[in-house]
Amino acid sequence: MNYLDFEKPIAELYEQLEAAKKLGEKSKVDVTKTLADIEKKIEATRANIYDNLTPWQRVQVSRHPDRPYTLAYIDAISDGTFMELHGDRTVGDDKAMIGGWGSIDGRTVMFIGQQKGINTKMRQYRNFGMPNPEGYRKALRLMKMAEKFNKPVVTFIDTPGAYPGLEAEERGQGEAIARNLFEMVQLKVPVICIIIGEGASGGALGIAMGDKVMMLENTWYSVISPESCSSILWRSWDFKEQAATALKLTPEDMFKNKLIDGIIPEPLGGAHNNQEEMFKTVKSEIKKQLTKLSAQDPEKRIEKRIDKFCSMGVVVEG
Amino acid sequence: MSWFKRVRRGVTTSTKEKKETPEGLWYKCPSCKTIIPVMDHAANKYVCTSCGYHERIGSKEYFEVIFDDNAYTEINEGMHASDPLNFKDTKKYTDRLEDSIAKTGLNDAIATAHGLVDGEPLMIACMDFSFIGGSMGSVVGEKIARAIDFCIANNMPFMIISKSGGARMMEAAFSLMQMAKTSAKLTLLSKAKLPYLSLLTDPTTGGVTASYAMLGDMNIAEPGSLIGFAGPRVVKETIGKDLPKGFQTAEFVLEHGFLDKIVKRTELKAHLAQLLKLFKN
Image (cartoon, rainbow over the protein chains, first blue to last red):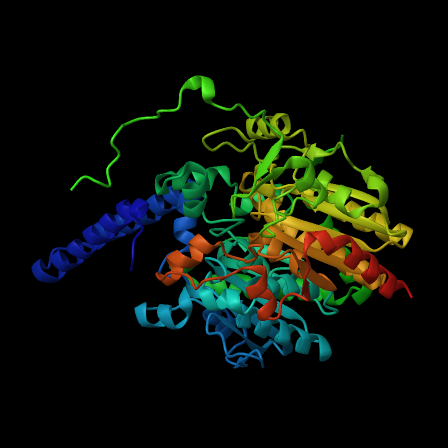
């Protein structure tokens, strides 16, 4: 287990637990009560910490190295039926953006999402979840295919942003994202988008123009990461906590500002603390939304989707 | 060996002989340093007569360059930004807005107006870089959305002149969603089969590039404009190498297939008029 800085008290209790267990094995002293006490204390501490997370701590949890990534969700939700598809048919296959067919209890769905790596080697392979233009074009190709065969689209968003590299610029990163926004908002099939980790800027929005856009409890979604925001507006990297607060990037704030459609609760201690439960919750939420959305007339659904995004923003009339 | 050194130090011209030049009469090109009268510079559409450098200009100047007889009707002129997030960094967002309004005389980073271009009606949404770096907040999104509504209601072609550093951080996710909003609105314009011209000027980066600026039926740019998604500094930091010469210029973007044309500002109006006539007939 990896522990974040504010999770120290939990880590210390786990150490105590281990120590007590060892003592019990060595000295034949009955430690069952002590163990139960410590376990109770762990749960209480965890509940206390996770009930009072600051926006910056939310950002930290969203990047927790043990947190499940897109493929883990898809594998669990589709019960092993997932068939990954590759390539944008133009330049190459982006490893930071994955997608393919899968079945949710007998219903075929097109899954798409940014993918982060689970260890150092894989993180590099996945480009840290930062897609190149071909990633967005692959996503669009798969969405168009889903539309053709009248299958709903489910996307998982988890990215620190679209890749700001030289070749990405050469191949039109801006155009690729813009095209996705334009096409995705008028897809004839139901589109569900779930932010499962980081939702950074246009790189996230590029696959997040859904009928239902939902955020897991310990995730963030905004125009920029708190670190970059700090570096630009405060001209220093040291104000990330303030930036995280100022950006109002938590699911609660995003929902209050009517910029997302719902929040999906996480197990106590975050998605990584009980992955199975997390997958179950996400699956049942997707099923619920799919049933609702599939019942709507496609034209009405598109109209509603466009109207929703067009109503976002606050201005003062002159 | 002091023959190359100055013998007498300091400025030797007496104060009396110094020539005073009144402010605002001359324009010095930042690129080639040529000095020409401001009147001549304006008559040449704010393009340097000797090296062709395109000075960054605002919406008023663009309207003057494009619309017949400088006659146009602005819509939603008074709309201005609110501070939905109560945002404060080193300075309050509301203070920033007040300062910018006082400094520029503009209400936000975009103006929307319709008029005639060689007799052809056109709606233009033009960004102003002088207002918080031309950043895209709720007002930019809403004004574009309403301009598109107007175009659909009046069967009028639409053009956006982009000049922006990207999203307005002080409106955080609201600003991000303006990318979604403008792109969603453009689908309606597209459905109405009305032409949408996107003019990318110096600079066009970030969320503006990744939404409406790249979605034109025709994407046109001014020569030498910086056009990209990530800014050059960020790209340089990412790859840890110096950027090739000409990277992210309009010419570079044209070469990579994301622009239809590069048009000099002095020829812009004639090109637009021709295009609008080609679309119509």
